[in-house]
Length: 95
Image (spheres, rainbow, N blue to C red):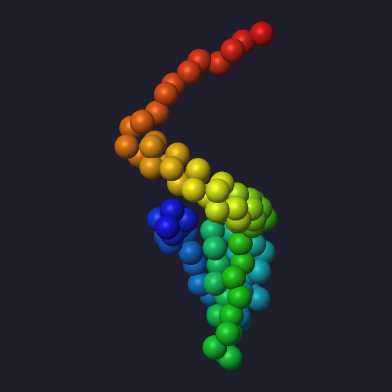
């Protein structure tokens, strides 16, 4: 799937709850500034994920675009055309 191919696992960080609480501002700044994903681990074995608002909005937009099978098929077809070099370049129309 296209989404899985584009996940940037290098931008994922992890911290335990104590680290997160101690360095809250630093972690929030890094997540927002660098578009990183922070996994917050808890002693219970459960955890949470912190992402920037921009990343969250991007995920929602992607879910919306792929929510229709017809639209998803068109998008995947376009991506495959682009990857195989079947593109057309056009100039902008200026007023």
